[in-house]
Image 1: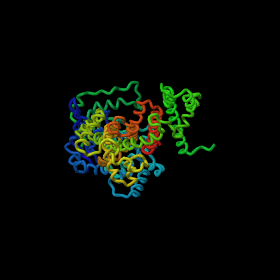
Image 2: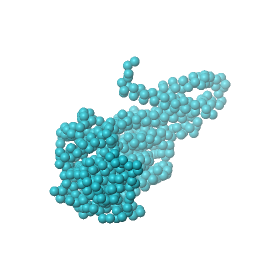
Image 3: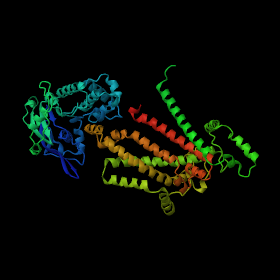
Length: 284
Length: 340
């Protein structure tokens, strides 16, 4: 049974010089798996994630034949009904914890708030639950962290706090939008491992948005490659290096590899024909 | 020496900075007082006094001493609250200021409250509904506030609300029958009448203050609402706002519990600035509404070359600015953990 079924998703931004299509007819499904979405900047991968949560603000327009969460179409839900989906059933971790945590609220209050939005719980229950969650993301001295403000945290800690905060209402799906791009390489792996463990333990579906092909190949089960708002190729993550599409090949060849050193890396070629070709369906 | 506790150190630093700023201000007013082409002795004794009277007053004022010594005398006088004697009414300037300043304080405080209470929500709504008709109306309201001269708006207000409709009291702080009815405790009639329990005076004073305070409030509303709008727009596009939405929070709470908390520090600066501007005394408003405040006091003194009164008033206004600055610095630390 699929957790999520996205069919023919479009995200459009009308402007004075015509309509800009950020996402153009994307279809895919998500089970209890780790689904990677890769592509260069502006390929529409973040917009896809945000459109699922119906977070595209006007003037942006989202249309889709369906965005179904366990058989219920989110496109038909009112804004009020969407609020009980956000956080509680689908959650999202964003790129940089420096900006995605509220700088003037204590970390404790922000986590407690995330829990109490979807659970009837007293402050002390929520506090205990938050401590537990911080421990689950390997935060040492969680009591101190609860009282601290975001600027007192390092990037890696901030992102682990973000993960704790977004998983505390126990959602079924987590969208991770470039969750490690703003972190030092040395803590990237640690944050990924924690996220991976929690997602597996809880039997969640994960949408992992990244521009880092190697990371996605390592970390995910299945990969969608997006270009100019469309999906150009879908493959199993372990077969990513045998990908067929020239765009995917171009992305792979523009990366340096330790096991196959090259004097000169390839420059990424972009063929306008790929942008006009029909989107490949990622529905299973 | 043992290291000082941080809060003691902080307090000492604050007091030190007040002292240094005040010293600078006093230095400037002192210099202005000395370079003005007005003979302070002549101003006191009059043109027909004999040379011996002139010399006696000259010595009494300490004008034979070196400038630096005179400066120290001046500081010592100011510290004791002695700004000299007014030429116009031969009363100590400090007494005059103690009388006119509460009038301005009362008006400015009410005005800035009007500006805050209406301006902040207007600015927030304009930012949230950016581009909508509400935003357009808010823009027009602010534009009128920026560009309409107060003497015109004030006269029109008096004509319509006092002259034609009779909803508010006319110029002056209270009606003629209520002058000096309640004993002066704070000098602010609204508060004094409350202390005295005299409702009739309170109502009358309120009917007099409501129009000038609303007009001044309108001007600070124009400024506060525009600034609130732009601060808010900046915050609404911040990533933590998206986080709050992802959590499943209602838009109202996203705006007020998350975004608004982040503009408080900037708003304090804006509000402190507009309050300080109002406390300086709005000369035109005070003249149109016959409001005996510090703005018209300093202006009148200036026009009659009453230097003691002018400099005394300047020092008081400067002190207000310094205190408001310190106060907003303290509030920064309350509202922004990064400033602690």
